[in-house]
Structures are given as C-alpha cells and as structure tokens.
Length: 109
Figure 1 (cartoon, rainbow, N blue to C red):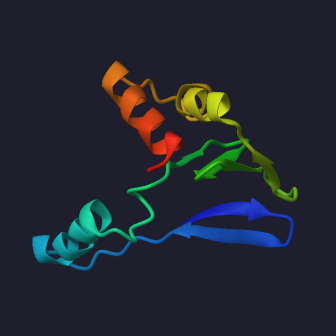
Figure 2 (figure 1 turned 90 degrees about the horizontal axis):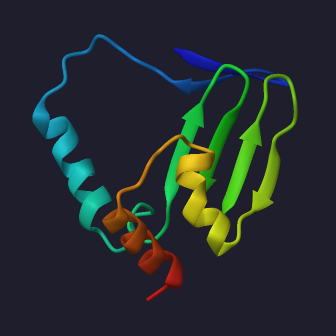
C-alpha cells in the first residue's frame, strides 16, 4: 500500500496485490478511457506527481498541492500556466505536436 501523510493521518494512494491479472482485466477500462465521450481523460488534462515532499494533482485547470501533514492548497491555472504546467510542475516535456493538441483541448470544442 502506498500512503501519503495527511493532517488527519495516512491516506491510501494505491494498493497492489499479487492476484493474477489478464489482458481482459484491462481492455474494457482502457477502451473506455480512450474512446468514451464521458471519459475524464478525453477533454481535459489529468496529471499527478508524487514526490517525498509534495504531491501535485491537476484535473482540468485547478492544481492541487498536498504536503505531508498540511492541508491541501488549490489554485486555478490560466491557459498559459496550463501549457507550462506539464514541464514546470510535473516534469513532463511535451513534444511540439503534444503542445498543439493540448492547446486545442484548452481552447474548447
């Protein structure tokens, strides 16, 4: 179990088991995440990064910062901050084509 220390105590982030998994266990969920119109991953940026001193979460335009034993902070990012957030906050370098795709998502339908 991967846990993160919160003011109210440890919070579980991820659990792992030794249960046998098969490709079919993942195929339906993977297909939903990639293709379904209501999938949260198709119309907004979803990123997270956990480091020893801080955990960052971004879903859409608000970024959440969680530090051990402190209350979470929230901040709404503007379009320019959203374009730079993958690299500056999450350590992800986007290719030029990815930046263009992200711009189209942020610009809306």
